[in-house]
Image 1 (tube, rainbow, N blue to C red):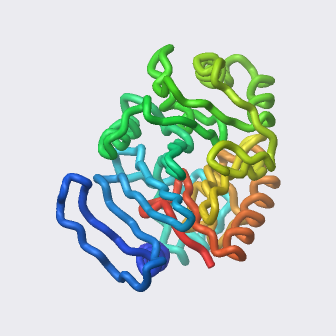
Image 2: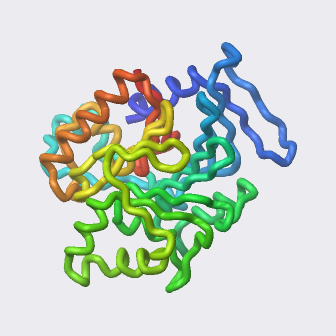
Length: 292
């Protein structure tokens, strides 16, 4: 497992400049600055890291979970023991609960909102960046599971008072057709933002030049977002150390496993062929990886 993660961590470092420190004047260390066009990375705080990509795009990973997180193998019951042992995953699969703040041309877009208070660290992460919820202009949702929309509300009050909320129409319609018990959190949250709720179609280009890409399977309207060379892939993979090599295996969370497998293979192929950077809500640290 350590060898697998080291491969991606060192690939990322080899293509970037890492700045370790805060904006308060702490010492910064520049690593492997190969060219003026090299990507840059800055650690803002524990679990908060900003990567500067091309075309003026920056993406900040905010780790929402406070403790180390392992996906239990019981979520991947169909995986043979031989694969688990070969990948050294017997103790579980390293993971996270993550959100991503993208800034482009002065526009701040938050992708998903984590699990919410009191357990989520999203608000602490924004504070570490010198921001508060009122500074967020848009919230783009990959899907409606609770660990992605939980940070939008405190009780019946919205957390992001100025943000337009965007979600796929397919996802919205599917959840609205579910039982009252299943959709309770979704319904309460969407009602809270009803005056600023926008439903998009797959293929639409959203504010900030963000393209909405169909990625169904995990949920009926699960969405991947592309901004230049960056892909926000949501729950494309719950166990990256397993599914990057064996995309044919699903976590039990995937609602339509056949579609989830097809989507995972298609998005991974697209990312590799185009040398894109992927940010995943359940990727382990460093949570942002570049493929080629």
